[in-house]
Length: 47
Image: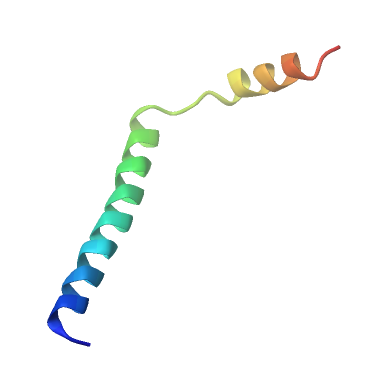
């Protein structure tokens, strides 16, 4: 691989893994309540 390919690979990996890390941190700081989600699903499926 040439230098430009390695640079693009590193940039892509940082972008993907960084996004994953940020989403994990966001979910840790702002957890979703399972009860709220279950109530929403239950309300949607009630006739």
